[in-house]
Amino acid sequence: MGFQSENIEEYHDIWVFCEQRDGKLQNTDFELISEGRKLADERGAKLVGVLLGSDVKGIASELGGYGADKVIICDDPALKVYTTDAYTKVLCDLVNDKKPEVLLVGATTIGRDLAPRCAAKLHTGLTADCTHLDIDMDKYLDFLRESSTIEVDPEKFKMDDTNLKMTRPAFGGHLMATIICPRFRPCMSTVRPGVMKKSEFDQAKADACELEMYPVSLSEDDLKTKVLEVVKATKKMVDLVGADVIVSVGNGISSDVQKGLALAEELCDALGGGVVGGSRVAVDEGWLSDDHQVGQTGKTVHPKIYVALGISGAIQHKAGMQDSEVIIAVNTNDAAPIFEVATYGIVGNVFDVVPKMIEEIKAQKAAK
Amino acid sequence: MRIYVCVKQVPDTSGKVAVNENGTLNRASMATIINPDDMNATEAALKIKDATGCQVTVVTMGPPPAKAMLQELIAMGADDGVLISGREFGGSDTFATSQIIAGALHNLGIGEDDIVFCGRQAIDGDTAQVGPQIAEKLNLPQVTYAGDIEKDGNTLKIKRLLEDGYMTVEVKTPCLITCVKELNTPRYLTVKGILECYDKPITVLDYEALKDEPLIDKTTIGLKGSPTNIFKSFTPPQKGSVEMIPGTAQEAASALAEKLAKKHII
Image 1 (tube, each protein chain N blue to C red):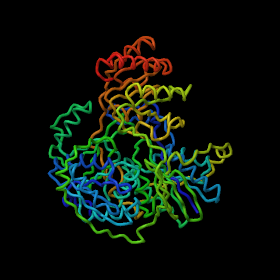
Image 2 (cartoon, chains in turn red, orange):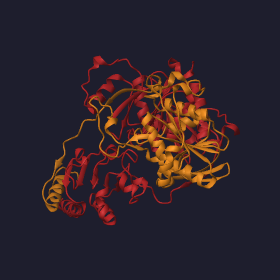
Image 3 (tube, rainbow over the protein chains, first blue to last red):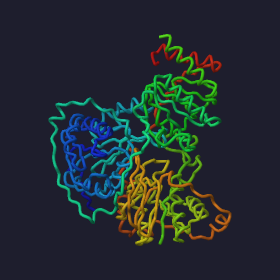
Image 4 (tube, rainbow over the protein chains, first blue to last red):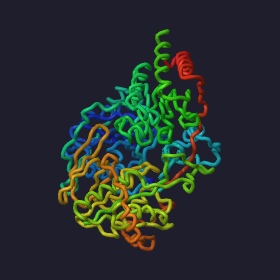
């Protein structure tokens, strides 16, 4: 057939699409650049950030501080606010011209709109919502030894494999799947926000980062959608991902939702301050707004302390919280799957147990 | 005017998930449901049908039993169904799937007033990729994460939900829209709908029917042709180290607080 994307030996370098909103870089950008640095070193390749926007040259070098060797900037008034049409055209033109081997995109509401559109246009594969990435085979096997129940036998793997190995939870984290895209380039992946670790910012590296302005070619015909307005939520969004303590509620508070939420708040405070989260039920029932949801469809969190109150532990939920440092679960059902991932478990009713927990935790802290 | 709604039959992952010994999903043992976001997509289409009397066609790719799901959606109010089904299509990744569905929609014909609705994402894969990929293959503008839709003639104003707010996007038909659960509450089936659904047409499109479709590259469909492949699938090790704290609420709470303090967690 002859697709350009089949000429895989022509493709080099690791790219990260860096998202800006209101002219500001996003946390996900720094996480992906930090992860991209690791991949670029494994591959002996250059790490390039790609930044689309209007008047954004000034913010680009910060990406260098997290590991980008270079940032390619596409600057145009039409790129100020994200639109599928303009961003797809500009990013695909750039990829077809410069041919990166890997293209990482944050799995945000923007990235998950842009990446599939681009993958279809570029005739290449895309893996959604990855939580772990490797190129080097030794490193991948180490990851398997640590994160799977598989007996890893290096003899059974092609150790010089250089495909990007993209691992993601399937079916709510019950299964993990490593996906490759062997026949086409770039290898594209969206990456879950909050999963990859951000490196330390290094000013010297930021100063040394190369910036390249790349000309944008867009015409009226390319733009079929029009953004009329962008509205920020008036209420402060809940920062689940950055919280040290999360107390989540589920079906177990259904008999008195107001009281259950109040207890969760109080327990947060007793534990030193944190954020109230919820299972899918809590959000679907309208007890909490969407931004509180922990799980595969909500947010992936790894706080120091995660408390699950009356949450049975459906796989969707566990996928979003099982990497928390300490997990405390309270549930009336001693066979609830939440206990499979918990550090400490108490079988009992939330309304009986939590008031006592608050009291006792306060007492322990006062005694210190 | 015709509205296509792309829907998927998925295993009900809200309950216990059954896994085969080789690590793949034991689909046969699990109940199937209509993907939740696709119900919202169907409702969005039926609302426009209520206002305009347009034709609503539900489209799915899947094995022959998926026909029952199409019948259910017809009982909800859709006019007809299309089942894309063939062994050659099995095992397709999102890229391959979207090529096949785009090919089928192209084959059925998309007019100037037409709209394609999809759910945001399916609960079995959670990728949210097939909608945008169909849009690209059909060269249609797309709006994803639709939380509200206003239609005035051929112009749609869509509230596109973001993590930190929303944007209002204007787009003209033909276009593709992916719907989230905030968009609406899907209606119930009516007795009349159920009685009549068996008389409404369901077209089956197999490989033979679509093989000359220009939007389908035959080298990139199915399990072997899909651009992405599963390199390895595995189950994460069970933590299984839970320490259950016994006793009355008072006793358990006290013991827990003591443990947390001892380990300097609080």
